[in-house]
Length: 115
Length: 112
Image (tube, each protein chain N blue to C red):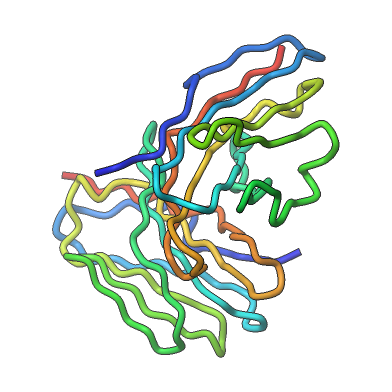
């Protein structure tokens, strides 16, 4: 069964450094998402992406964050200047079609640790 | 800010017991309610997406019901097995926010 893959599984970065988290969504999917979960808290929506542009973004997704689909297969989340509070599990998800009543397919996540 | 609540937070049951847990969500601007099963160190796996008031969905021993007027959904597991041990997440999709808002999950442990 096709799946969403994320790399790396664990990223350790110094505060203030830029980090790029990578995702390969399911190949014929059209909608892409990033979520994060800070340890002990709820999964939080960050951003959705469709047709090469951001569809929705949450308050968390400020100017330090950006997303890109550079080559038709990868979907990346960049954090420009990381802060300690960016430490979290980051999940990528994708959905196949236009209907929001279809499930999202999640990757295994990248654990980001900011030192 | 949309409030999605799940209860109980955690649950221990014996193998063979049936169990259920609750997800409550805003009753306005409802579009869909998702249930996901999340095992440790794995990705959340979609169980159901429910859209209609009164909807009932079933997948093996797991089923779910939906009441959009009062803003709740129940997830039932019949004859729990140790492999059902996981966190069960619900997520609300509103027509206005156009994003999934997750509950904090119910962590189920099934003891052999």
